[in-house]
Image 1: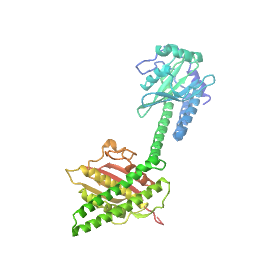
Image 2: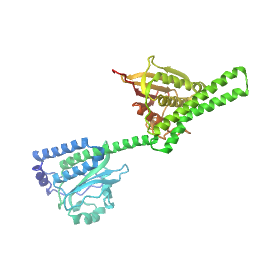
Image 3: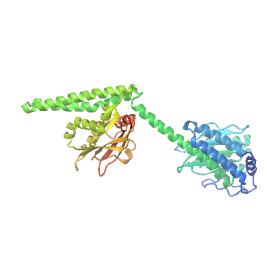
Image 4: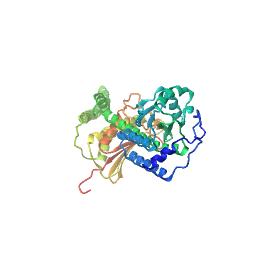
Length: 456
């Protein structure tokens, strides 16, 4: 590499070719070309590119900026230039300097938004145009005065600024400057620099994606109530809403039967009171589990049969299902499906999904209201529970948001139910997903790991 660098610097000298003013509105395509690069020069550059690509392929997200700064220093030293700068674009096209490295005698550019006189370059780059300044004649009139004041006193003339694209979108730029009166920028040279720049840009995009994923995960944890008192209150209100509604419904039915006493009404009153007691106990269990979750209290999970949990939930919601005129198809495999779980939390997930299905079918009048609940062995080490309805389904644009906290399509909903359900399922090592049903409705699918016994 050391023997090749002087050769790169030698080729950086002006070639006395005809100077071309920077294009405004057209992509810059330098016409002058230097001699073909030597084999040693190409090999040295390829070694540099390979080394940088390898480093960025394995770099952690929190180290991306530091690695870009190291790469910029290596790049300007290798080429014999004065400064290398890397900037990132916002979605709105605003350019900010992410990092800059400079040789002795020249300061790096400060991090943050670019200075006002560089806004012209910002617009050109975000439009996909490479900017080439070979000499003072190339600077456009609108920036020549500021550039003269800023660059001439530092001895900078030639500049190369390249927009960097990832996935068809301009996300960053790389810029090089040199201490020279003028120089040429052959196409081959610009292409090589762009290759290295896009390696850095890809690492930056990966860093952004990982940061967004971490932010999403942190938000899910936050709204699950592990730290936020306000969200804990919302969660409790949502979780106990179902049993409280059932208590009110059964209490109202019992009162109506007592207003018209008859011997056969006593049995109905007794059944309503039994349901009230059962739903009251269920609300108490839900509150106990939520309090444990917000205390970060890890309750011991126990062996449970998924099929039995499903049947118990269907029995609990039988009154509501019959009142809503819903035909229930429970297609459960005969043998027990054992999982290691907090049975109340898992039942709460199933109950929430079935209640959502009941609400989704409340507006259906032109076809049968069918609830299909199935269980199956998903893989050798997992079981799946599907809850399918014949309602209007979920809009395609909402499918990616329905598990987000506080997202709801219900006029009086809080948007906590599905977020809590997914949090509970994931705390059991499983997954919760949603998709469209055919020809109508939606399917929610819970996958949980099978309980492993000794010897498995």
